[in-house]
Length: 164
Image 1 (tube, rainbow, N blue to C red):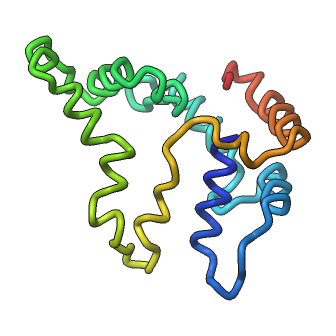
Image 2 (spheres, rainbow, N blue to C red; image 1 turned 90 degrees about the vertical axis):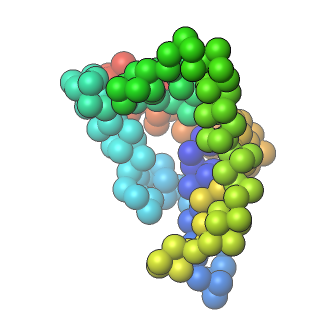
């Protein structure tokens, strides 16, 4: 649900000014049918999930909500995955907290390059930053939309053992 809301916000930031904002309901129906800027969301996620099961040494699959809830644990897992485990000495010296601070949404979104920079294609860097929170979808989606996304997500992911 957060993915959909963020994608809707992001694509609206990329739309030319003369096109206006795409209504949430229109974007939602397209998203549910698998029509989005980067292809069907469920296919994209499922392909990475399946590869992470087949090749766990090559594909590190993580869920944003879990990472946000347990940042220290996920930082350790990611560091091990890329072959740079964090030592006890580094942990004692505050390296974990330093990395988490430097990689935080609050820090990265306030860097001058991200506030005023542009991609070579013209998009502003700040288009890639929204809130960095979990659960903002509650401010946008109706109960019917939530139920529909839950049904589709269950249908698409249940056979693969992927749960959100």
